[in-house]
Structure formats: C-alpha cells, structure tokens
Amino acid sequence: MTKLFLTLHVLAAILAVGPVTVAAGMFPRALRRAQAEPQDPAARSVLRTLHRICRVYAALGVAVPVLGFATAGSLGVLGSGWLIASIALTTGAAALLVVLVLPGQDAALDEVEAAADRPGASIPGQGAARRLTMLTGLFNLLWATVTVLMIIRPGSTTGA
Image 1 (cartoon, helix red, strand yellow):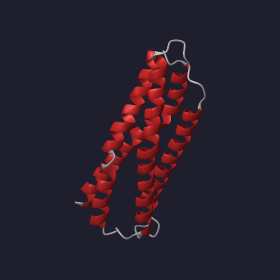
Image 2: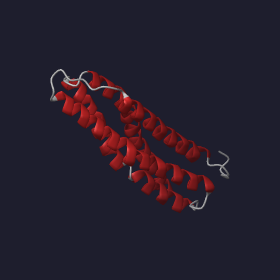
Image 3: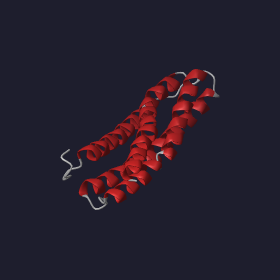
Image 4: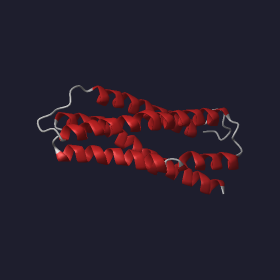
C-alpha cells in the first residue's frame, strides 16, 4: 500500500502543484500586458485562463498533503523532523496561495476587466504585478524546499 500512496502522492504533486506553479508564475507578466492594453480581449483571456488554472489546480492540490499523510503513516515517519518541516512549509505555501496570491489575482483581474469597460483607459502602476511576482516567487521557493526535503530526508536511513 505504501508504494501506491507514494506513487499517487508524487503524481498529485506533479499534476496539481506543477500547473499552479507555472500559471501563477506567468500571471504577473500577463497582468502587465493586460494593464497596458485593457481593451485587448486576448490579453484579458490569457489572464482569466491563468487565474482559472491557479484556482482549479489549487483545489486539486488538496490531494497532495492528504496522500502525503497516507504515505507517511504507512512508512511510519509521521514524527520525523524533515516531515514536520515539510508539513509546515506546505501549510505556509497553501496559506500564501489561498490568502494572498489567488485574491491578488482576483483583484487584478477585476481591475483589468473594469478598465476594459472604459475605452481608452489604462491602468496606472505595476504594483499588483510586482506584488504577485514576489508572492509567487515565495510560493515556488516553499514548494522547491519541500521537494528537496522529500528527496533528501535529513536523518533518513535509506542512504539517500
């Protein structure tokens, strides 16, 4: 059962977290383009699509920690320091995504959509794009750290 849980956990991480990481990373650049040309339907469409990818795959990403706990339980490593650190970092990444990144994307998208209704309007400043770039970078760094901890597992007796 352990191999099945581990396989599903890794697949869920790749298939759920991967798209969020990529789409969230692409969002600020697409936002800058849409802010410069809010009447461009293609720019708004790209922005909406990236945001939808982030929302949908974030919801699917709930499977990653669920399967991770199942794997850890079957391996008997629930009390390991590297796992506890990974859980804390995963919780931080999820909170960052749900509390700051997704609402920031929502607000930026609403702003672009509102400007699209005003012909000739442009959206001043790049503050939202810069903020989302920083938050997404932090989100990605947290996930990269979790990945390293999952592979190296400090104190592991597997020889890895």
